[in-house]
Length: 384
Ligand SMILES: Cc1ncc(COP(=O)(O)O)c(C=O)c1O
Image 1: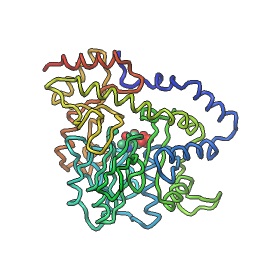
Image 2: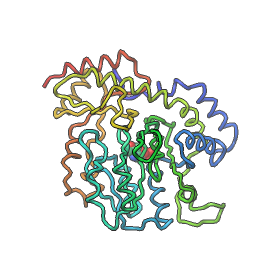
Image 3: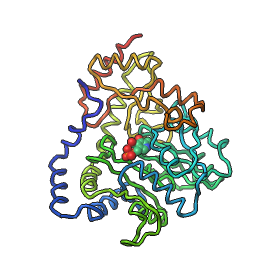
Image 4: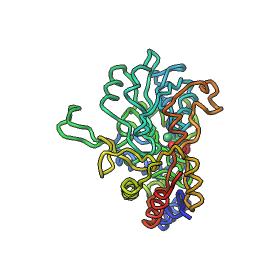
Protein backbone atom coordinates (compact mmCIF):
# COMPACT_ATOMS: atom_id res chain seq x y z
CA UNK A 1 0.00 0.00 0.00
CA UNK A 2 1.20 3.53 -0.75
CA UNK A 3 0.47 5.75 2.25
CA UNK A 4 -0.60 9.34 1.67
CA UNK A 5 2.11 10.50 4.06
CA UNK A 6 4.48 8.36 6.11
CA UNK A 7 5.40 10.57 9.08
CA UNK A 8 7.28 7.79 10.86
CA UNK A 9 9.57 7.40 7.83
CA UNK A 10 10.07 11.16 7.48
CA UNK A 11 11.18 11.55 11.11
CA UNK A 12 13.21 8.31 11.12
CA UNK A 13 15.65 10.02 8.74
CA UNK A 14 16.79 12.26 11.60
CA UNK A 15 16.13 9.94 14.53
CA UNK A 16 19.54 10.30 16.20
CA UNK A 17 19.54 14.09 16.01
CA UNK A 18 15.91 14.26 17.19
CA UNK A 19 16.59 11.96 20.14
CA UNK A 20 19.61 13.94 21.24
CA UNK A 21 17.67 17.22 20.90
CA UNK A 22 14.78 15.92 23.00
CA UNK A 23 17.16 14.42 25.57
CA UNK A 24 18.90 17.79 25.85
CA UNK A 25 15.58 19.47 26.66
CA UNK A 26 14.50 16.77 29.13
CA UNK A 27 17.85 16.95 30.91
CA UNK A 28 17.80 20.76 31.02
CA UNK A 29 14.77 20.92 33.30
CA UNK A 30 13.58 24.04 31.37
CA UNK A 31 10.53 23.49 29.16
CA UNK A 32 9.08 26.86 28.15
CA UNK A 33 10.48 30.24 27.05
CA UNK A 34 14.09 29.10 27.01
CA UNK A 35 17.13 28.81 24.79
CA UNK A 36 15.62 26.23 22.39
CA UNK A 37 12.78 28.52 21.34
CA UNK A 38 15.05 31.54 21.01
CA UNK A 39 17.54 29.51 18.90
CA UNK A 40 14.81 28.26 16.62
CA UNK A 41 13.32 31.75 16.30
CA UNK A 42 16.73 33.10 15.33
CA UNK A 43 17.32 30.37 12.75
CA UNK A 44 13.80 30.68 11.31
CA UNK A 45 14.08 34.47 10.96
CA UNK A 46 17.46 34.06 9.21
CA UNK A 47 16.09 31.37 6.91
CA UNK A 48 13.02 33.42 5.94
CA UNK A 49 14.95 36.70 5.78
CA UNK A 50 12.98 38.75 8.31
CA UNK A 51 13.83 40.64 11.50
CA UNK A 52 11.52 38.71 13.81
CA UNK A 53 10.18 35.19 14.26
CA UNK A 54 7.99 34.45 17.26
CA UNK A 55 7.21 30.86 18.24
CA UNK A 56 3.54 30.22 19.08
CA UNK A 57 1.40 27.18 19.86
CA UNK A 58 0.03 26.44 16.34
CA UNK A 59 -0.71 27.95 12.93
CA UNK A 60 -4.23 29.08 13.77
CA UNK A 61 -2.90 31.01 16.77
CA UNK A 62 -0.17 32.57 14.62
CA UNK A 63 -2.86 34.14 12.39
CA UNK A 64 -5.17 34.97 15.33
CA UNK A 65 -2.33 36.72 17.16
CA UNK A 66 -1.31 38.82 14.14
CA UNK A 67 -4.87 40.17 13.82
CA UNK A 68 -5.26 40.60 17.57
CA UNK A 69 -2.01 42.57 17.64
CA UNK A 70 -3.19 44.84 14.83
CA UNK A 71 -6.37 45.49 16.85
CA UNK A 72 -4.32 46.33 19.97
CA UNK A 73 -2.11 48.60 17.85
CA UNK A 74 -5.17 50.46 16.54
CA UNK A 75 -4.53 49.38 12.93
CA UNK A 76 -7.93 47.69 12.80
CA UNK A 77 -10.99 47.39 14.99
CA UNK A 78 -13.90 44.99 15.47
CA UNK A 79 -16.14 44.86 12.40
CA UNK A 80 -13.35 45.76 9.95
CA UNK A 81 -13.00 43.65 6.83
CA UNK A 82 -10.28 41.23 5.80
CA UNK A 83 -10.19 39.87 2.25
CA UNK A 84 -9.45 36.15 2.10
CA UNK A 85 -9.67 33.37 -0.51
CA UNK A 86 -12.97 31.46 -0.36
CA UNK A 87 -11.28 28.07 -0.90
CA UNK A 88 -8.80 28.18 1.97
CA UNK A 89 -8.59 25.81 4.92
CA UNK A 90 -11.07 26.97 7.57
CA UNK A 91 -8.32 28.03 10.01
CA UNK A 92 -7.55 31.14 7.93
CA UNK A 93 -11.15 32.28 8.32
CA UNK A 94 -11.41 31.25 11.99
CA UNK A 95 -8.51 33.59 12.77
CA UNK A 96 -10.48 36.49 11.27
CA UNK A 97 -13.88 35.81 12.81
CA UNK A 98 -12.38 34.92 16.19
CA UNK A 99 -11.17 38.55 16.33
CA UNK A 100 -14.68 39.80 15.45
CA UNK A 101 -13.43 40.94 12.06
CA UNK A 102 -15.43 40.26 8.91
CA UNK A 103 -14.07 37.72 6.40
CA UNK A 104 -14.72 38.90 2.85
CA UNK A 105 -14.46 35.79 0.72
CA UNK A 106 -13.07 36.16 -2.81
CA UNK A 107 -12.89 33.48 -5.50
CA UNK A 108 -9.58 31.78 -6.35
CA UNK A 109 -8.01 31.49 -9.79
CA UNK A 110 -9.07 28.14 -11.30
CA UNK A 111 -5.60 27.72 -12.84
CA UNK A 112 -3.58 27.83 -9.64
CA UNK A 113 -6.16 27.66 -6.79
CA UNK A 114 -4.73 30.79 -5.14
CA UNK A 115 -6.65 34.02 -4.50
CA UNK A 116 -7.64 35.67 -7.80
CA UNK A 117 -5.88 38.98 -7.32
CA UNK A 118 -7.66 40.63 -10.26
CA UNK A 119 -10.99 40.29 -8.39
CA UNK A 120 -9.88 41.93 -5.13
CA UNK A 121 -10.37 45.62 -5.91
CA UNK A 122 -14.14 45.47 -6.27
CA UNK A 123 -14.44 44.02 -2.75
CA UNK A 124 -12.49 46.86 -1.10
CA UNK A 125 -14.59 49.21 1.07
CA UNK A 126 -13.63 51.84 3.64
CA UNK A 127 -13.76 49.06 6.29
CA UNK A 128 -11.21 46.89 4.48
CA UNK A 129 -8.00 46.76 6.50
CA UNK A 130 -6.12 43.72 5.23
CA UNK A 131 -5.74 41.09 2.57
CA UNK A 132 -4.99 37.64 3.98
CA UNK A 133 -3.30 35.69 1.19
CA UNK A 134 -2.84 31.92 1.45
CA UNK A 135 0.04 30.18 -0.32
CA UNK A 136 -2.23 27.22 -0.88
CA UNK A 137 -0.84 23.73 -1.45
CA UNK A 138 2.69 25.27 -1.32
CA UNK A 139 2.43 27.73 -4.23
CA UNK A 140 3.33 31.35 -3.52
CA UNK A 141 0.46 33.80 -3.99
CA UNK A 142 1.99 37.17 -4.82
CA UNK A 143 2.14 39.72 -7.63
CA UNK A 144 3.07 43.31 -8.26
CA UNK A 145 -0.64 44.02 -8.77
CA UNK A 146 -1.25 42.89 -5.18
CA UNK A 147 1.48 45.19 -3.85
CA UNK A 148 0.07 48.12 -5.80
CA UNK A 149 -3.45 47.49 -4.48
CA UNK A 150 -2.27 47.24 -0.87
CA UNK A 151 -0.34 50.50 -1.21
CA UNK A 152 -3.21 52.31 -2.94
CA UNK A 153 -5.77 51.39 -0.25
CA UNK A 154 -3.35 51.29 2.75
CA UNK A 155 -4.05 47.63 3.41
CA UNK A 156 -1.91 45.22 5.41
CA UNK A 157 -0.95 42.03 3.61
CA UNK A 158 -0.94 39.03 5.93
CA UNK A 159 0.43 35.75 4.62
CA UNK A 160 -1.00 32.40 5.66
CA UNK A 161 2.23 30.51 5.10
CA UNK A 162 1.07 27.28 6.78
CA UNK A 163 1.68 25.27 3.61
CA UNK A 164 4.59 26.94 1.84
CA UNK A 165 7.74 27.18 3.97
CA UNK A 166 10.75 27.49 1.68
CA UNK A 167 8.88 28.81 -1.36
CA UNK A 168 9.95 32.12 -2.84
CA UNK A 169 8.87 34.89 -5.16
CA UNK A 170 11.21 36.42 -7.71
CA UNK A 171 10.79 40.19 -7.69
CA UNK A 172 11.64 41.57 -11.10
CA UNK A 173 13.64 44.67 -11.89
CA UNK A 174 10.44 46.48 -12.82
CA UNK A 175 9.60 46.79 -9.12
CA UNK A 176 12.45 49.30 -8.70
CA UNK A 177 15.19 46.76 -7.96
CA UNK A 178 18.50 46.83 -9.79
CA UNK A 179 18.52 43.04 -10.06
CA UNK A 180 15.93 40.28 -9.70
CA UNK A 181 15.63 39.35 -6.03
CA UNK A 182 14.17 36.20 -4.51
CA UNK A 183 12.07 36.73 -1.41
CA UNK A 184 10.77 33.85 0.67
CA UNK A 185 7.12 33.41 1.51
CA UNK A 186 6.85 34.68 5.06
CA UNK A 187 8.90 37.77 4.15
CA UNK A 188 6.64 39.15 1.42
CA UNK A 189 3.78 40.72 3.37
CA UNK A 190 3.54 42.76 6.57
CA UNK A 191 3.25 39.63 8.71
CA UNK A 192 3.02 35.91 8.19
CA UNK A 193 1.65 32.91 10.10
CA UNK A 194 3.34 29.48 9.92
CA UNK A 195 2.05 26.07 10.97
CA UNK A 196 4.38 23.26 12.03
CA UNK A 197 1.59 20.68 12.31
CA UNK A 198 3.31 17.27 11.91
CA UNK A 199 2.22 16.80 8.28
CA UNK A 200 3.51 20.18 7.07
CA UNK A 201 6.73 20.55 5.02
CA UNK A 202 8.41 21.50 8.30
CA UNK A 203 6.54 19.42 10.84
CA UNK A 204 6.92 19.25 14.61
CA UNK A 205 6.08 16.17 16.71
CA UNK A 206 2.90 17.86 17.90
CA UNK A 207 1.42 21.33 17.40
CA UNK A 208 3.54 24.43 16.87
CA UNK A 209 3.47 27.63 14.82
CA UNK A 210 5.25 30.93 14.30
CA UNK A 211 4.74 34.54 13.27
CA UNK A 212 7.31 36.33 11.13
CA UNK A 213 7.50 40.08 10.46
CA UNK A 214 9.87 43.00 9.96
CA UNK A 215 7.65 45.23 12.11
CA UNK A 216 9.22 45.71 15.58
CA UNK A 217 5.99 46.85 17.28
CA UNK A 218 3.92 44.05 15.77
CA UNK A 219 6.53 41.49 16.86
CA UNK A 220 6.59 42.80 20.42
CA UNK A 221 2.78 42.88 20.59
CA UNK A 222 2.37 39.34 19.19
CA UNK A 223 4.92 38.04 21.69
CA UNK A 224 3.13 39.71 24.60
CA UNK A 225 -0.31 38.59 23.41
CA UNK A 226 0.84 34.96 23.22
CA UNK A 227 2.13 35.25 26.79
CA UNK A 228 -1.06 36.28 28.64
CA UNK A 229 -0.69 39.84 27.30
CA UNK A 230 2.44 40.29 29.35
CA UNK A 231 5.91 41.66 28.56
CA UNK A 232 7.02 41.56 32.19
CA UNK A 233 6.05 38.74 34.58
CA UNK A 234 2.75 39.45 36.37
CA UNK A 235 2.30 42.77 34.56
CA UNK A 236 -0.45 42.51 31.91
CA UNK A 237 -0.86 45.11 29.17
CA UNK A 238 -3.41 43.19 27.13
CA UNK A 239 -6.05 40.50 27.59
CA UNK A 240 -3.84 37.91 25.95
CA UNK A 241 -3.74 34.16 25.33
CA UNK A 242 -1.44 31.37 26.38
CA UNK A 243 0.05 30.46 23.00
CA UNK A 244 3.73 29.65 23.17
CA UNK A 245 5.93 27.18 21.33
CA UNK A 246 7.45 24.76 23.84
CA UNK A 247 11.14 23.94 24.16
CA UNK A 248 10.73 20.33 22.96
CA UNK A 249 9.03 21.31 19.71
CA UNK A 250 11.55 24.11 19.12
CA UNK A 251 14.48 21.70 19.55
CA UNK A 252 12.88 19.25 17.11
CA UNK A 253 12.04 21.97 14.58
CA UNK A 254 15.57 23.36 14.75
CA UNK A 255 16.93 19.96 13.65
CA UNK A 256 14.41 19.65 10.82
CA UNK A 257 14.76 23.24 9.57
CA UNK A 258 18.22 22.45 8.20
CA UNK A 259 16.71 19.76 5.95
CA UNK A 260 13.68 21.64 4.67
CA UNK A 261 15.27 22.75 1.37
CA UNK A 262 16.49 19.21 0.61
CA UNK A 263 13.01 17.85 1.36
CA UNK A 264 11.32 20.52 -0.75
CA UNK A 265 13.62 19.66 -3.67
CA UNK A 266 12.67 16.01 -3.39
CA UNK A 267 8.99 17.05 -3.45
CA UNK A 268 9.73 19.07 -6.62
CA UNK A 269 11.26 16.02 -8.33
CA UNK A 270 8.16 13.95 -7.57
CA UNK A 271 5.85 16.75 -8.73
CA UNK A 272 7.86 17.03 -11.92
CA UNK A 273 7.55 13.29 -12.58
CA UNK A 274 3.80 13.39 -11.95
CA UNK A 275 3.42 16.45 -14.20
CA UNK A 276 5.35 14.95 -17.08
CA UNK A 277 3.93 11.43 -16.91
CA UNK A 278 0.30 11.56 -15.83
CA UNK A 279 -1.63 11.53 -19.08
CA UNK A 280 -5.33 10.89 -18.72
CA UNK A 281 -8.15 12.93 -20.26
CA UNK A 282 -10.18 12.55 -17.05
CA UNK A 283 -7.55 14.42 -15.04
CA UNK A 284 -6.51 18.08 -14.81
CA UNK A 285 -2.93 18.59 -13.58
CA UNK A 286 -1.57 21.69 -11.83
CA UNK A 287 -0.81 24.35 -14.45
CA UNK A 288 2.91 24.98 -14.67
CA UNK A 289 4.99 27.21 -16.87
CA UNK A 290 8.26 25.37 -17.15
CA UNK A 291 10.25 22.40 -15.98
CA UNK A 292 11.46 24.12 -12.82
CA UNK A 293 7.83 24.01 -11.74
CA UNK A 294 7.80 27.72 -11.23
CA UNK A 295 4.67 29.64 -12.20
CA UNK A 296 5.56 33.10 -13.39
CA UNK A 297 7.70 34.34 -10.53
CA UNK A 298 6.12 32.18 -7.88
CA UNK A 299 7.77 28.99 -6.72
CA UNK A 300 6.05 25.89 -5.43
CA UNK A 301 7.14 23.63 -2.55
CA UNK A 302 4.47 21.01 -3.23
CA UNK A 303 3.01 20.61 0.22
CA UNK A 304 0.25 18.92 -1.74
CA UNK A 305 0.05 17.64 -5.32
CA UNK A 306 -3.55 18.35 -6.21
CA UNK A 307 -5.20 17.05 -9.36
CA UNK A 308 -8.79 17.62 -10.47
CA UNK A 309 -11.33 15.29 -12.01
CA UNK A 310 -15.06 15.58 -12.67
CA UNK A 311 -15.08 11.89 -11.64
CA UNK A 312 -13.17 12.60 -8.43
CA UNK A 313 -15.07 10.25 -6.09
CA UNK A 314 -14.84 7.35 -8.52
CA UNK A 315 -11.13 8.08 -9.06
CA UNK A 316 -10.48 8.10 -5.31
CA UNK A 317 -12.31 4.79 -4.91
CA UNK A 318 -10.32 3.29 -7.79
CA UNK A 319 -7.02 4.44 -6.27
CA UNK A 320 -8.02 3.02 -2.87
CA UNK A 321 -8.89 -0.31 -4.52
CA UNK A 322 -5.38 -0.22 -6.03
CA UNK A 323 -3.72 0.41 -2.67
CA UNK A 324 -3.06 4.15 -3.12
CA UNK A 325 -4.15 6.46 -0.29
CA UNK A 326 -5.37 9.91 -1.32
CA UNK A 327 -7.01 12.82 0.52
CA UNK A 328 -9.30 15.71 -0.41
CA UNK A 329 -8.13 19.25 0.46
CA UNK A 330 -10.87 20.18 1.15
CA UNK A 331 -14.24 18.45 0.68
CA UNK A 332 -16.47 21.30 2.00
CA UNK A 333 -15.66 25.00 1.42
CA UNK A 334 -15.77 27.27 4.50
CA UNK A 335 -18.92 29.11 3.33
CA UNK A 336 -20.80 25.77 3.22
CA UNK A 337 -19.78 24.70 6.72
CA UNK A 338 -22.31 24.59 9.53
CA UNK A 339 -19.91 26.71 11.59
CA UNK A 340 -20.60 29.60 9.19
CA UNK A 341 -24.38 29.35 8.79
CA UNK A 342 -24.64 33.03 7.87
CA UNK A 343 -22.46 32.39 4.81
CA UNK A 344 -24.23 29.22 3.65
CA UNK A 345 -26.28 31.05 1.01
CA UNK A 346 -23.29 32.68 -0.66
CA UNK A 347 -22.35 31.33 -4.05
CA UNK A 348 -18.76 30.87 -5.19
CA UNK A 349 -18.85 28.70 -8.35
CA UNK A 350 -15.06 28.41 -8.81
CA UNK A 351 -14.55 27.49 -5.14
CA UNK A 352 -17.38 24.98 -5.25
CA UNK A 353 -16.06 23.39 -8.43
CA UNK A 354 -12.62 23.07 -6.83
CA UNK A 355 -14.02 21.43 -3.70
CA UNK A 356 -16.03 18.99 -5.83
CA UNK A 357 -13.13 17.97 -8.04
CA UNK A 358 -9.81 18.12 -6.17
CA UNK A 359 -7.84 15.09 -5.08
CA UNK A 360 -4.41 15.11 -3.42
CA UNK A 361 -1.94 12.41 -4.49
CA UNK A 362 0.76 11.09 -2.17
CA UNK A 363 3.82 13.34 -2.21
CA UNK A 364 6.57 13.35 0.39
CA UNK A 365 10.36 13.47 0.60
CA UNK A 366 10.55 9.79 1.60
CA UNK A 367 8.52 8.28 -1.23
CA UNK A 368 10.38 5.70 -3.28
CA UNK A 369 10.58 6.29 -7.03
CA UNK A 370 8.90 2.89 -7.66
CA UNK A 371 5.90 4.13 -5.68
CA UNK A 372 5.67 7.30 -7.77
CA UNK A 373 5.99 5.31 -11.02
CA UNK A 374 3.34 2.85 -9.79
CA UNK A 375 0.90 5.68 -8.97
CA UNK A 376 1.35 7.21 -12.43
CA UNK A 377 0.71 3.84 -14.10
CA UNK A 378 -2.45 3.22 -12.08
CA UNK A 379 -3.76 6.75 -12.74
CA UNK A 380 -3.06 6.53 -16.45
CA UNK A 381 -5.11 3.31 -16.60
CA UNK A 382 -8.15 5.00 -15.00
CA UNK A 383 -11.16 5.00 -17.31
CA UNK A 384 -14.77 6.10 -16.65
C1 LIG B 1 -3.82 27.07 5.08
C2 LIG B 1 -3.74 26.77 6.55
N1 LIG B 1 -3.90 27.76 7.44
C3 LIG B 1 -3.83 27.55 8.76
C4 LIG B 1 -3.61 26.29 9.26
C5 LIG B 1 -3.64 26.10 10.75
O1 LIG B 1 -2.47 25.55 11.26
P1 LIG B 1 -2.50 24.65 12.60
O2 LIG B 1 -3.08 23.33 12.23
O3 LIG B 1 -1.07 24.56 13.00
O4 LIG B 1 -3.32 25.38 13.59
C6 LIG B 1 -3.40 25.22 8.37
C7 LIG B 1 -3.07 23.86 8.82
O5 LIG B 1 -3.72 23.09 9.37
C8 LIG B 1 -3.50 25.46 6.99
O6 LIG B 1 -3.34 24.48 6.11
